Length: 167
Image (tube, rainbow, N blue to C red; front, side):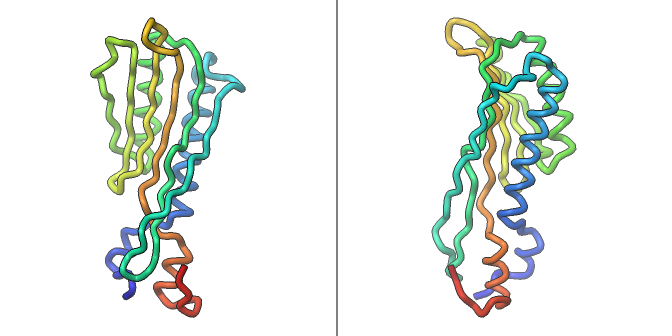
């Protein structure tokens, strides 16, 4: 059974979407480092995350998602810094494919700020800031998730472009 044409119009390929998400996160981290000298550090820790493979669909093809993408920096920030980062986050992601931007104010009185940007497909980037206090290790963290998608070769195979070999 071939993947329906209607679905293919909305479908994004795993490789391309993964690259765009990684580039968007890298760009935001670089923008933060340029805007706030406190974040301009060589001590950022990067984790490329891992690729998870979903169960095969009725055609035998498996979607893939990428989880655990992150940038982390242990740094002491102030409330004013967190507010400035929120403005930068909102501006950066409102113009990206992750245009659904939210701020979760529930734990800000405890020195924990969480900003989130997501796409209609379910891709997401979160920015978490922990201000120094007795409960927090001061840090800023960017984490990303790419929802499940087909690889380009799977779509080619579903259209019969390479002899019908299924992975």
